[in-house]
Length: 246
View 1 (cartoon, rainbow, N blue to C red):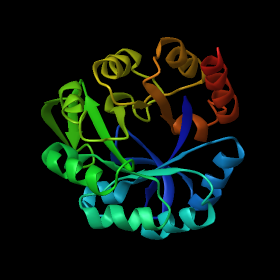
View 2: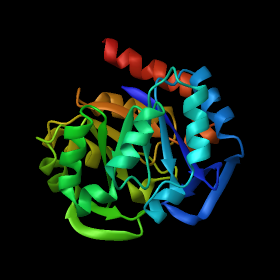
View 3: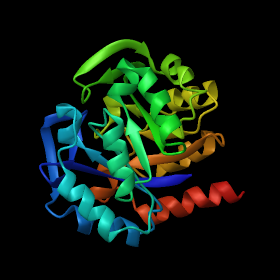
View 4: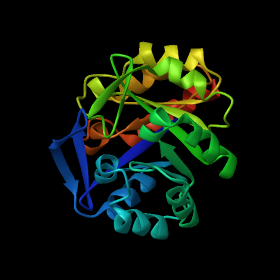
């Protein structure tokens, strides 16, 4: 299982939000490249970038920071989400070295877009399902739909999606612990690999995920915990590797 550092970009800076609220931000750095380099030095094997402005605007906004990270750190896989609503955006991201593009809002309102994207860019598409009490939210989490996360996830099973990122909005950025039950229920219900997100607090959460997960859980995204020093990225990845080797 990969422990994947999140680099959330807002106005070119590295920030963390609480439950996706743009007005509740903590700025951790004005230099996202330095942040990305730090996580790689500490053992990250993949980076998770989010264009927060783009998620609300419906189009990429933080291109300068994103392009700079990909240019200088081309030796590690990168996945990105936030404002990806058309094939042109995906193509442009892949051309600069992004490995996986995360489709969130557009996957909910236009599932055929996911199918088309998977056909055009096989192996490069991730679906992001962000849920509040099991119901999927869109448009930067500003709108909660009536769609259940598990039902939506099942609808993507035969489209060629690389993986599904499941985020518990209520726990994201709150340091309240990962929603293991909901994450595992999703992983067991579908045949697509799952990446967990939201609520990681410390090494105990990593251990709980490892103990309760199946082979379908391929990663976990962590943000505030590593930025505030509550979780040591190196030790977290070493622990995940130990469980996988047993």
